Length: 408
Image 1: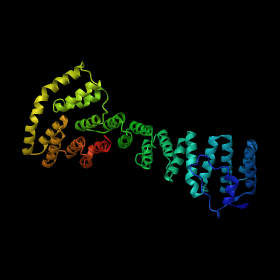
Image 2: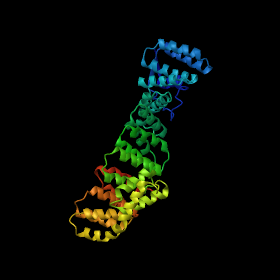
Image 3: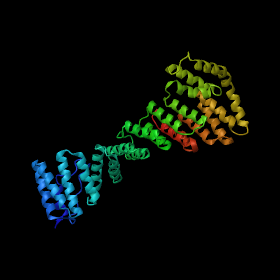
Image 4: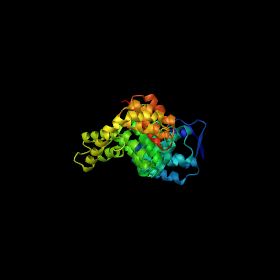
């Protein structure tokens, strides 16, 4: 058995065998590290490499079989595997390339400086070979080791989806997003869609919420807003008032689509907040989502007309009474009415009054106060208010924070 310096062994065996899929050039190993190769292994591998270079792949295969029969140490196995990678590359045998890299990685002899690149190459090969368990293993090691290429994270995400691990898929995409500079488009919209679909189908509410919020931050289309907020509503146990507030944001984001969406705003408000119901009904009719000939629409229109004039006229009196009332419930209800008419200044004043008087759910008030501030152009105050929302409405407040931060 002859001691071979590691650098020499790499020059002999790996110079032509470095994985083509590597994102970076492997670092050279320390000169003092030595391979200890059995003499028959060294001779057979050298002959195999000569045969590969000459295009005599049959002879190369035979020589590596001879080397296998003479293996006496992990060093022998590693060097043979590196030559097999070279042979598999010449043969365009992707599974064999993957297997060769696995042997090298499992040996523990890959130089530390090259380990991440080798893991990346193995993971890419496994992914292309549809070996998703191995793809997840090696791509996970590569991304944990410092790989920042978004494509590596995308493959890892897809591997997790294929393995029915949606939480891991979402976490992988979130890591990729976090690595990108502000305003980057390195993460395509459809990658978000893949993670959202996996999380939603698995009924993972927190993961779905986080990744849909990330998508509307990057790609704030009406469709994406609708997907985000409807999935949030579907996956969380929301009370009717919280559901209404979700639909209010969806309307603000211009994401209402179809008659059912509009009715989810109009039906809960027709009796109590006819100003809001009136504007939503008119909007739905103008968009074509609602039809004036519909019996439901006719009934709602009649209800709204009966309530509209008297409701609007009563608001100043209600606001005055709210200031002397015990508790903040009247202030809250009157603020909600002003909000429905788009009169945000008195709504803001009354929401503050409701908070000061107490006897109300502060999270409900702050959600609507934040919305009023946002819609009146007071973005900084809106952000502070939404940040104060806790409990079941915290997720909705975070969606509002995304909307407030976007160009109008």
